[in-house]
Image (cartoon, rainbow, N blue to C red; front, side):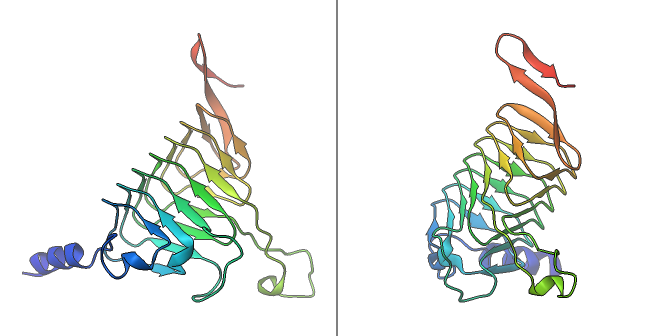
Length: 198
């Protein structure tokens, strides 16, 4: 009985493009869904979701610091078509997070474009500047389970990020990167195929 009720609730309570919650988004493409239950979602008008995209349960998806905030850019978060964002993941945007088409992530991936300043030791970190740098993830890329994508990260097209990696800089197209910070270990070279990197 409990399983039947839970199954019914997950179907009925999911967010789609044509229900009231879906219409609050800046864009919400046909065939897309945010699975039930979500974790935290706010400032939806600054979030654009493409078509055929699925965001798993327990997702955190936000634009700005607090609900109702007027953001400086629009959209703040853009997720492309046919993406799959894993369970328990968080996409927390303040300025610009661009996720291309056909991007998939494992569970518990965290993507943000804002960090915390800590230079002034006389003030709590929470009261210091919070620098923002745009983040982009290219078409057809895969972000492994537990990875963290930090401000300023630019992940190219058809890139694989290994599980539990921390991406802080630029990862070129057609490459595999792992570690903290993530470093390229393989790259596709025309005429040679996949080549190991030193």
